[in-house]
Image 1 (cartoon, rainbow, N blue to C red):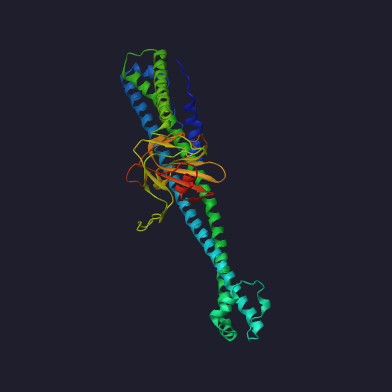
Image 2 (cartoon, rainbow, N blue to C red):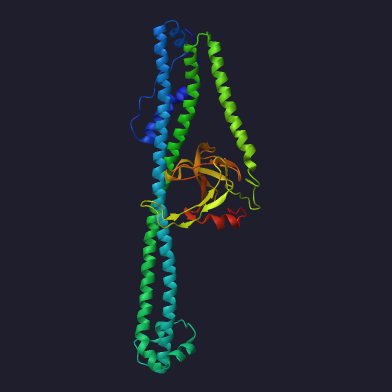
Length: 419
């Protein structure tokens, strides 16, 4: 009986993929994926009998189909986890907008309250000097807001001050209460935002695990198919008669696959210059993420259908399908995988709380993986129209400490204007 070396990927199928993907990522019982794969001796033995040969052919075809089904299953799970991450991110974005908006209102209301207090203090001081009867005293407000002469000229007399004093004080008190209420609401909103930030981060980690499992499953399936398809060919074609010929065929296919991958990487590297100054860096070390015209800007989008974001958190750059997408600056890939309506998505962390995101990437054209280090201006993907997209373009986002900002002024300030 002739033996055969079992490739590492087969052991990964049996020992790692089923356990990792099913138990860790899916959270369900492990499927029965630990199958026995045919050896070369099985193939040789089956060739001696037509009935056995046909059975072995059917068996191998079934294994190929099962491997493809696993790829589709893990990809579906990755897409599901990506969609869950997007939902969590959207919830954080909504809470972030509310918290920031309340904080802005609170700061404005605090300024209004301080101005009202200054006016009330001025009136109280004037009444005290003029002997007017009022409930306020000069000691209630210590800060002199200035402009007393102008105010007195308009009001006409101290008696007039006395008449309006109660209203001014009431307005100052109301302004103080409003400022405090908004400050309290902003604090609650910040707490809720931080809770949602944690939940989004958890969903991100789940999406990363699912995406990595899907990519590994695809790589394993491609390697497995090289062996199984060669075994199938050996059964269907009687010209190959020895183990050496069989293994030579496997090795030839592997080398062809490696050469094709190397050629793709070389082509991406050769295109790193892109059209005109594509991928070139500014003096601050930043590059345009894509070349085209701006078809969508950051901000409110009225008239969106139910469930759609009313705030567009990125800048859309209309570019030709398959054209290069460049890393805006150096960093580490935080996530590369499906992201709901964003289609295929890459997110890069650049340090100091700054991240950039790249959406609607073409299927099969994501050239980086989670955890990978990338250089500024490096080709990371190709423009596509995946997710909720009606035409090829790049949706580009910039976030600081998780909060989305307008990418156009940010990139312009770094010498890499998007337009």
